[in-house]
Each structure stands twice: as structure tokens, then as C-alpha cells.
Length: 199
Image (cartoon, rainbow, N blue to C red; front, top):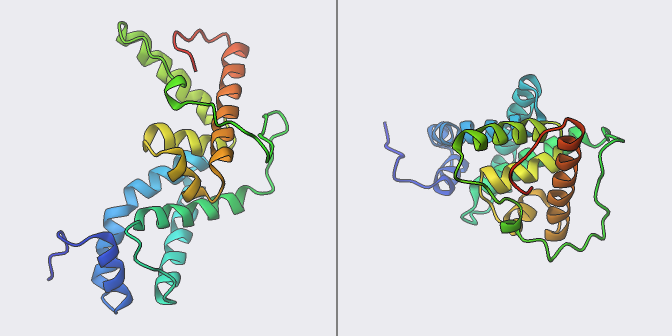
């Protein structure tokens, strides 16, 4: 059995295109946990997450077999982009009237990511509770906003990378972050959650 540990995802994808099914098994093994975590965080339902995960890999297989994958050194971005498109297709009809959504022409160039969180590091217990409350509020956000928050803070992607993966402009990504924070502030106020950090 061939050792694939030294090969990149891109090399494995190209081996699979060339007929090596074991290379795809390795590719799936490497990427399934991270991809499923991303999908589950966005869709918020294990059953839906499983469906999206399966559909993502069906599309990946189809696109690879059709020769629609070009080695750009960003296989994981390509994979996430496919999953994102499937999720957004599923959510396109679902709009929450009570949540503020950004307009297409949002200009948020002055929003700085280092202004988004100012954590009080002196009190670890309080911060743990705050992060629990923030995570709970994030769970209530609509999928596009929850997705950008997840990518920015959990995957530590830049807004440029987020825009590339989700197929929107950087300003739209920034807008989604801004509205996510507005919505989280509103939820904190409604539920009388006192946060010692500035969202």
C-alpha cells in the first residue's frame, strides 16, 4: 500500500483524477473532520450537515472526474467553496425577517478586525462564560453571518479569503460580520447578558 503522507491534497486529487481511488480515500480522511465541523457550525443540524457533507463529496468526485479541478494549491478552499454553495442553495428561500441583513452596497472598509474583540484577560472564568454566551448568540445568527464569524474567528481566515471561498466581495464579507455583531449586541441586550468585552 502506497504511503500518501508526504503528498499534498492537490497531488492526491490529481492522482484520483488519474484513476487512483486510494488517493481519494486519503483525501477524504484528511478533510472530512474539518469540513464537517464547518458545515455543522453553519447549518446547525447534524442531519442537514450529513446531507450537505455527502452532497459536497459527490460534487467533488463529479468535478474531479469531469476534469473541472485545476491544481491551484488551494484544495481545501475549493472544497469549502463547494460546501458553501450547497449550504447557500439550501438556505436561499429561508430569510429571517427579524434579523438585519446588509445591503449590497455596504461600504465597510473602515471596520478593523482587531476592533471586534477586546478581551479582558485578567478574569479567565468570566471570559469562559462570555465566550459561551457569544457562541450561543452566534448559533442564533442566519447562516451567512454565522459562517463569516466562524471563518474569521475559528478558522482565522482573512476577509479576502472569506470573500474568495464564499464568492462575495470583501465588503459583503465585512458587512456580514458587522451585521452579525449588531445582531449579537441586540441579543445580548434582549437577554440581559452582560459582556465585559466590546463585540
